[in-house]
Every structure is written in structure tokens, then in C-alpha cells.
Amino acid sequence: MKDVRAFYRARVVLAGSLLAIACGAIALLALVPAYAIGNEEQGQGEAVQAAPSPASSADREEIARAQVLLRELKPIASSTPSVLEFVEAILAPRPAGVAIQSVRLARGAPGTLVVTGTAPSREAISAYRAALSDDPRFESVSVPIGNLTGAKNDRFTVTITGHF
Image 1 (cartoon, rainbow, N blue to C red):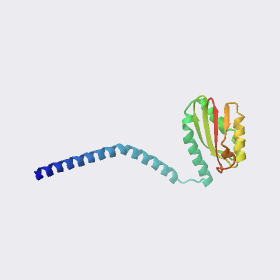
Image 2 (tube, rainbow, N blue to C red):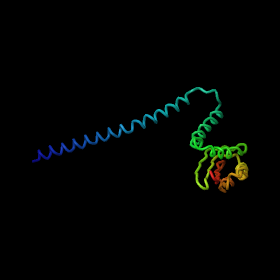
Image 3 (cartoon, rainbow, N blue to C red):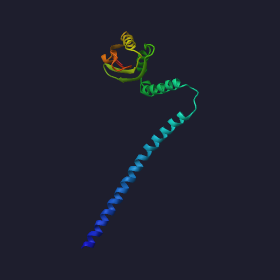
Image 4 (cartoon, one colour):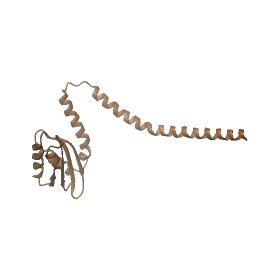
């Protein structure tokens, strides 16, 4: 009787082990494409970084910032031309030293544009807000009070509502 139990117990353990191995193999095969895509993107980034460039470090920072802006603005650029007009209206009145880091759009009635960036002073943020407020396409332009008091250093957020 003990021999029969041991035999069946061994069969159950063997079947369970084979089942676990099969599940592991399926999971591995499911993850291989994701690994290949991630590894390919990482390899492209390393190739770009490894290429010798005569540009200074300030130029490299500007290029990196432009690449981030392009990546973030790509969904907006692929949509209707009217949205591009609003993005141009946001970027045009920037005072000197104000850098826009991201623009988020939420369509609706009214729609909302949230612009984040950096500025050298709170006066530059206030001037930027005033310039945006003068645009008749925007219903309201608001900046959190913490940005105007300088509580968050040089970072700011502007929320714009209108019909986008």
C-alpha cells in the first residue's frame, strides 16, 4: 500500500513539475517580444549617445530638451490644425528665459491646456500669464499662487481654459 501511494505521489509531483515548467516556458515566450523591443530602443539610445559630437554641453542640453518636447508634443501635432494654433499661441508670448517643458490638452467644452515649465523669476511667470490672458481665444488663464510667490523655485504651471 505504501508503495502504491509513493508511486502516485511521485506521479503527481512529476505532473505538477511538468505543468509548472510548461507555464514558465509560455510566460518566457510571451515576454521575449517585449524584451526585444526594450532592448532595441535602449540600443538605439546608446548608439546616439556614443556618436561623437562637436557640440558643447549647453547645446546637448538644448537638444535633449527639444527631443523631450517633440516626444510630448507629438500627439498634439498629429491632431487637427486648430490645436496647433493654440499651441503656437501658448509658445509665442513667452518672455525671455521661460522654458516650456510640457503641454497637456484635455478636449471638451471648455477644454483645458496645462502648461508646465521653468522661469528665471516670478515676474517672468506673471508676465507670461498676463500675455496669455490678453489672448481672446483663452477664456481663463490661472497660475497657482505658490508659483507666483516663488515657493517652488523656478517651476510653474499655467492652466488655460477655452474651446479647443
